[in-house]
Image 1 (cartoon, rainbow, N blue to C red):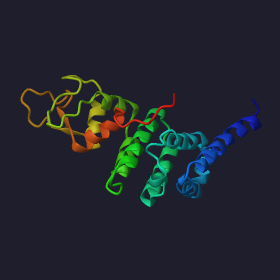
Image 2 (image 1 turned 90 degrees about the vertical axis):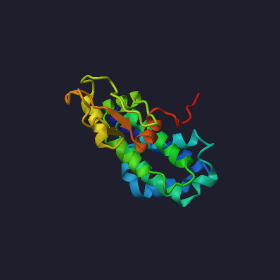
Image 3 (image 1 turned 30 degrees about the vertical axis):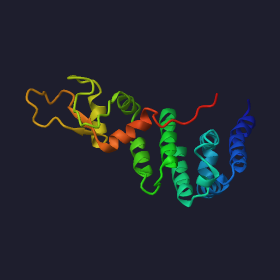
Image 4 (image 1 turned 135 degrees about the vertical axis):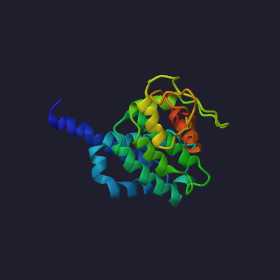
Length: 207
């Protein structure tokens, strides 16, 4: 495949995205706003732009015409798409879509922490995401060592603490070696965030 053919294939992704967006009633408003603001970014990351509109298309029960017509939804759509375009990691983009589903389903979109969720996700490494998959959120506030009294992924655990997902509850625990993994519990924010990591609010998958 020569350079021209590669460019044509690349350009076709945005053409398909435009066609999908125009075929969904009321999506054209949010999509048009996004193109006006981030048109250059979409051209550079066309496949991700196509992923985004296909995600909307594949979840018609969530992204209804009534929802797409809401200004607060349109604002969230534009905000989220910009950050989706610059996210390099495939797994984190999957989680990102789950977060946006949560926003779309929320009764009070103004209070949904879309910005905080997406910013927190952007700060996570692949190993951080893996550790979060092993977290067992406990609404009773039980504290424990995620991987026991060892050094396993201790840096990742401290990163999750710094992001407010986990709370360090070690305190002055007798007999605890400070070089071992700390005792933690999941914060309220962390319990909500982990739902998206674990896919408890999951996008529809095409069969």
